[in-house]
Amino acid sequence: MSNSSKTGHHIGFVATRFAGTDGVSLESAKWAKVLHDHQHSSHWYAGKLDTDPAASMLVPEAYFGDPANVWVNERAFGTLTRDREVTQKIHELSEHLKGTLYEFVDRFGIEILIVENALCIPMHIPLGVALTHFIAETGIPTIAHHHDFYWERTRFLVNCIGDYLSMSFPPALPSIQHVTINSHAQEQLALRKGDPSILVPNVLDFENPPPETDGYAADYRRSVNLEPDDIVFLQPTRVVPRKGIEHSIALVAELKNPKCKLVVSHEAGDEGQDYMLMLKEKAEQVGVELRFVHTAVGERRGTTVSGDKLYTLEDVYSQADFITYPSLYEGFGNALLEAFYYRKPVLVNRYSIFVTDIEPKKFRTVTMDGMLTREVVNHVRRVIDDRQYRDEMVEHNYQMGKAFFSYSVLRRQLRALMTNITGLENLSDFKYQ
Image: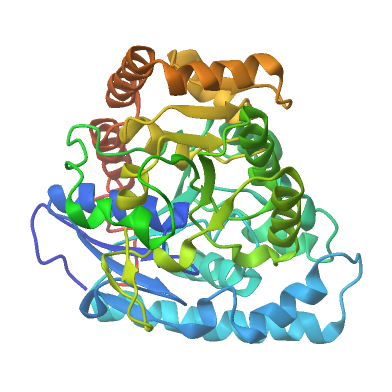
């Protein structure tokens, strides 16, 4: 295997999924764009893909929702002992997936792997094991981009796979460069595993502001039964308990303005429907108009199967008046950066990473500390009513985002990462060539 370009390398992105608007997929696309600007070519391996088929390898068994993997996960967590059949299934699946990784690297001439979240959170144990063995066997230079660790999620704490967690989530191998997205994760990885990492925050393209709202985006309100003069509170997150959406409902209720409507842009995801049903009941009890609009939001503009218009997340932001982000926990906070980028005022619950990595940068937000106090509600009311105050707030945040979380920051970090990882005697230590 040889590199076709003197300057660029063939990069292989690996994850369980590169599709939709989840944080991992979005950040991976940003990395690929910046790498492309530096003449590196990106290729994609996952169990669910919406990337270019000519540069991708779809392996359905690598998706966390694949039935065989779901079977493993149901028996791996919530118990302290492991059935023999579970061990056998993990080994069987990991061997199969390792073979597909060899095929992927061979097919596209991959020289460097970028593993997105598959070596830190055990959504797919066999894939993590397969990656660990593949990297150990080949010595391929690897950037392990860690968005979430298993010790950050209570549902993974009781398990019978401690041996696999120690080995593969993440592995300690000489050809792996670890990357974390916040300072707490960086500290915990060093403390728990003894592994150093480079901190690369999530970013947005603040050098290029979003385009002006057009007629297509303006039609979004009508399509989800909103009036032109409604005050739209947008919750731009998945519907999972850690997003604290009940606080958003309580905020709109406290404002006591029938024109205030709450819109949730994403679906429930992998944690069931119970939380969504609870939110619907709560909104009904307190008289808040709540809309779940994920069926109208896609990767690109178009139409649904039934012929309704599909809008991008950018379209949805353009029609929002205020962003609610009362998360209890976040790995970083993509939606918060999006609020800054689209120049929208935002309510933030002071989750730990906001406190350590974002708040010290002096962004101007409405902040709550676990409770929706009268002071918080009054601050939101002022932001809505005082246009000059609101405009100054969002413009300041845009400029701060440009300074600290722009593509230029990512370019500098990726340049350093690539210099580090390609310093292995010009990749000669990677023996699968």
